[in-house]
Structures are given as structure tokens and as C-alpha cells.
Image (tube, rainbow, N blue to C red; front, side, top):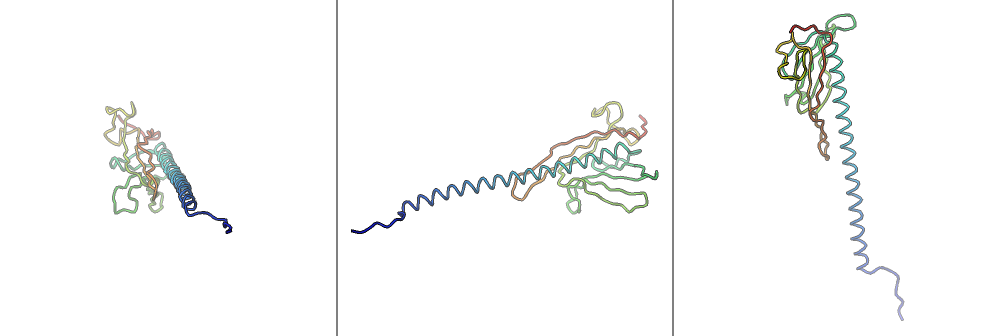
Length: 189
């Protein structure tokens, strides 16, 4: 009589292989989903921090500005006084030129006070940015739009920022808007 050796049959091995593959596929899918979520979360946090920081910096300078020079709805210059009382020009702009180093960036450029001009990128991957200027009476009213630099007392900045990872969905901050009063600027309505 022959003794049966302990082992698995071919059918048992194939069933185990299929079940193992299904379990491994589920584990890999879960890992990829968690990784994608992590990347999206990181992109969202970076995007949020950049946008918040840029709006805070713009707001600080807008409140301290003694004058404004409106260039267009994507570029304005504010006149500030440095600690010695010398005028400093700070330009805020959005760059939509594809050949530029700052393409799709909201940036701040400082000139004056004896220092060379410096450009600081505030937010990257900005898809849209626009400035709007208002008189003192009622902000955000179309009848209250300022037509020149002299009557401008409030500034509104609206921007949309989008960031895309290599293998992740797009993260966005859509249509963030903030309105600032130019506290130190004299107005003539």
C-alpha cells in the first residue's frame, strides 16, 4: 500500500493563488487611494497656506498704503512709507505670460528705499486674479466703482488657485475674494 504524501492539489493551489491575488489587489488599491488622498491633502494645505499668506500680506500693505497707482485689473502699485519715512513702491500683479519665470503666479515687487527691486512670488498656480477698486460709500456696488486713483478707497482682490499633483486630482481654491480699505490714503470723491 502506498502512502499519500502531504501536499496540495493543483486545484487547491489555483484557488489559493486567485484568492491571494484578489486580497493583494485590494490592499494595493487601498494603499493607492490613501496615497492619493494624502497628496491631495498636502496640495490643498500648501495651496491654502500660500493663498492665505498672500492675502494677508496684500491686506497689510493695502491698509498702510498712502497712495495707489492703478495699472490694470491684474496689476496695481501701492505707495508705502518705510521705517525712515521714505516712499516705497510695492507692486502686486498676476503674470499670465507663458514665457515668464513667474507664469501663473501672484507676486509682489518692491522698489525704492535705496534697495534694488525684488520680486517675491506669493502664490503659485493661480488660474485667475483680478483687482477691483471702489469709492468709500458702499463697497461691491457697481454704482460705487472708482474710476481713478484719487477716488479709490477700497480694493478687492479675487483669485482662483489650482494645484495638480503628478497622479492626483486637482486641488483648488476657487474664487477667493477679500476687500481692503486703504486707511492711510486721502480720497477725493
